[in-house]
Length: 242
Length: 216
Image 1 (cartoon, rainbow over the protein chains, first blue to last red):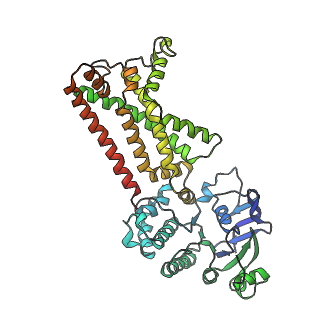
Image 2: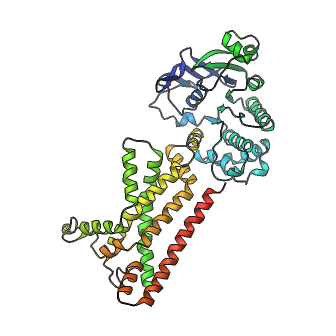
Image 3: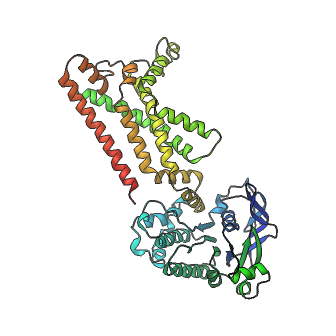
């Protein structure tokens, strides 16, 4: 399997607190769905921001598609191969269609417009194309956020609790689309979730992160059925209080 | 009368355009970027928002007067006192802090996560700034309309640096003062009504824009 991300000794602190301390390293493989689970404040979102090149580590290295990223490099070319769907989507105050078009406009890609209509259909947004984003429900807004990410056809899709605040219908719809794009385009997906059932449904590999470090990363379903670490066992069995 | 109304619109219109060119980018910068001395910059802007027009007039007078700071230099592109450009300079000084301050507030009120998310979509810093300004567009419009309202109705600075010269620097506010002093109340009231309607129109625009901004 091809490694798309190589993280080595990555550390990031906010003030006195380590948000991330990946001394053990992390490889993410092209085309996989990696679910990262763990309690709030464990470092999951910090990790996603680094994978999207929105933040730099204080120390250590991040290599993407064989290119080692340093602070002097412009992150833009790499950032444009990756995108994130956030837990709380912040949409532009314009129509659904314009929101989805926006990322293409940033890149000056007008030829990608043809992909918008099928995406609207796929995500059940066809009737809302001309609706103003501020009138959407939470589930609809999250589907628009997913559509605006997918239209860019990223190599890597990062998802930060994408279904945390959604009803079962919207959550299942988004899960289905995640599965499809991973299968059809082999898009690498890194999914941060509190929902271990969702991780089990979607992921090829699952990692538990605690206090900024990975406790265990293993294939699905081995992560759930035969965890090596006692903390993973406690987390999987719902015994970890956080 | 039309000459006076036209000159008022021209002076305040040009002053507003210059204030917008200076004030909107500066307001966006102050609202988006954190830097050392930011609180001091805020304090200066807030002070500027409350500048008394007559003090601005006095400052520009001292600056441009033949016995002042720049006047004796006789540089061709520096305007002379009692001219339209001198009035425009005074109005730019009054309007710019207002445009900066309101733009700064409008930009700062935009959801900070929007910036992160736009960045994650691959926006450059310039594209992020444009996106934020676009989100704050109603606030920026309010800033411009507020700036216009402050200069079209002020009298202190234009009287001091313009001199209220007939067919040259006489604008609505200075004409009203003159007509009242001469006892020509009908003319003063007529001009006053025009100014009042302009002011009402500007304030109505602000109210409507603010309503539009606050709608879900």
